[in-house]
Image (cartoon, rainbow, N blue to C red; front, side, top):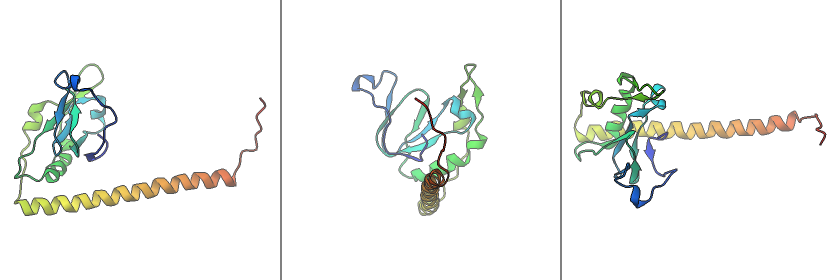
Length: 157
């Protein structure tokens, strides 16, 4: 859950696992990590861009058709710092569902939700593109430095 939209899975489950500890979140659901050590750094929230399976550490929100999924995603992301994280006693954090249910969310008319979501999505796309450029330049710099300052140490077998 490092991207705003999950488009692919790193792990797969067999059909036998569905209902035995895993469930399916339909495309368009919002996923929120509610238990794990990562919660002490950030609260992962994303949209399922495909049908995905998830376990008890994640909650999936099915979105009413009157609500723009990305508008809600950005609104929930803005609330991350207000979500209290409890210690589980085993080094992991936990979000109580009552805290999530207690947020008062504001939903403007559908056209305004769409405008806000489109604007924020455009900014995310720009940030992603610039980050990729930055990573490419870092790699290029590393290659140039290796050419400019080659290692003169010879290793004996």
